[in-house]
Length: 554
Image (cartoon, rainbow, N blue to C red; front, top):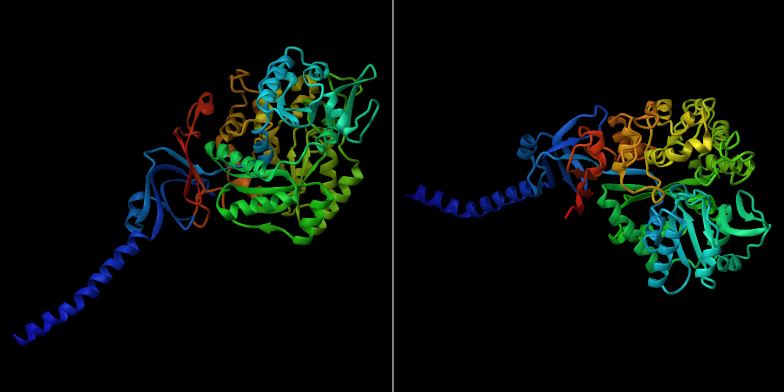
């Protein structure tokens, strides 16, 4: 009896401890992960391009990838997502966009898709009625979509708005039409010229059309956005991007002040979009980053500069080696003299930063490729980029492979431009344009983007254009220059791991692998298997950043 009593007494003392241990053990099992995604078709986009059906997230990063049954034995997550067989991909990365400007454009007159100059004026008039004060700003018209495919002129604009300044930017951002009130404010006079730009005149009179650097004469007179407008622009852009599965965007051409704004909003937790920021080609931006050095946080990476070599093909500002096929004795122009690009490249090289140069025409591409090659001198890991690489002479393609220069392309440009690009370039030069497969083969990889707001923000349209090479109406029937289509695997890599690589971020994002950020997207159909014509109809069901749901389809 005495022994039994002693044992009973001991058990009374041990029972609370055993209960505490049991509760602690349960808690440890319950909280050893934040999120389990299971029953999905998970495209990891790892080196072997393997698939899985589950992965585990903790503290914003992926901690395990594999089979659901085995992972559930090890991890007890706070939240479990049953993907119900839906495809899961790494969060999409847009390797070339204008995120902030897109957000600002949400606050202006939307002229995308207008089918005539009269339709533009109707849209602007309605916008002006709703927004009674200040400058009237709009963007998105494209004369190539009109029956009469010439640039408009400002007479009707002047009659509608004789006193209120108006600027309406073309879809590519490289040309604009302004009214006389805006020209007066900017001090633009007939006969005035500018390097790297064009102030159009007909019969000695200003038409209101400004091309490339000439646009800046007017835009510099527009009042800067307020702090609230800037915040609304960033958050508005973020919402729309999350809805199409984007988790990282490369914002190509910001001023250094915006870096601080983005960083502050990210630290507050309101801006969750990851941003790879390229600073614009301006002295103050060089001074800022050269003195401060590269800046890196989980959501913001600043180590690159965006330089413009020429304009756009649609506005005939692209710099060509030979005359435009539809404009005799006109070859476009460089936006600065070659010496400027050489000096900028030397400074960026010496300071160890990345140079990313907009080059559309074959002459512009040749100039920048030669400047790059003279500094890079062969194989390297600088990852200097040519943005667009739209028309490249066959004689110049070698520069990419010889110097590890990265062609950063936007597949929807091909399907948007194909209707009129042949008129601009003629045969056989059109065959040297939008040659994404040839460019990919130079280094074995290629980052993809949209260039939004020039194109639609949807990366699934990027995938469709890269693979099928048709527009959203399914034209042309056999695809545009299909010899330069990408495979589905290549296209997916181009908007995930290869886009991350172009930003020096492949170790932290771009695939669903252990140790990487838990940025992923769930779609309603599998873009790796669905029929090509159905790709534009695929929808995003949900988007996650750091394992946190930032978008869900209603």
